[in-house]
Image (tube, rainbow, N blue to C red; front, side, top):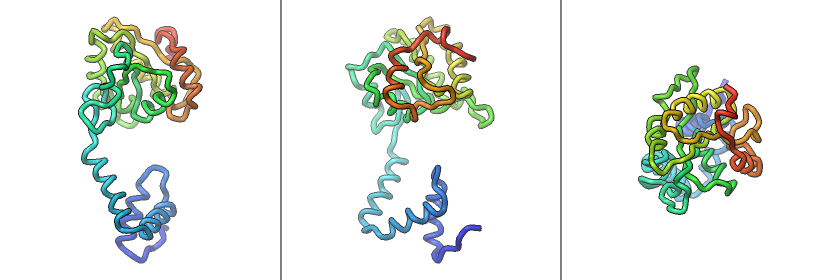
Length: 207
């Protein structure tokens, strides 16, 4: 049974915080009470940051990465290698890969992976825009960098079949990442080596 709180406003705030991933009611209450002890200006700045995040954030017209403008800084960087596109699940993977400093190509953020149980099919992912980009004259290689979970492997294989008609080289990061592993939790050295030692997907697939 949830502990009764002395204020409906406090209860409402705790309920909202406890909806966040990994945040239980006790943690939510601690966070809300902390905010109550802060100056109004600090709390207003915190609230405005969240409102601006939701209302003003954009998704890059090219790679679907999160950005403040129409095109993200990576896609706008003329020094990036535009012949290589790495396919990732979401922005967390972009951040992890950028942290290795071993990759200078572009990205394509799928926005998830195939999961029939959760009702996520190809139409819920950024697949069509990927195919369009793959057909671009500058593109020579597409790198699969999805998690090695069953859903990630299934998604990689689906994309591989969709990309074959483009005639472009399709590779996958090396198996330095453990089966069932997710990129964001992989250390930078291991992830960096997996990127450098990528292999042709047709020789690497397990599905």
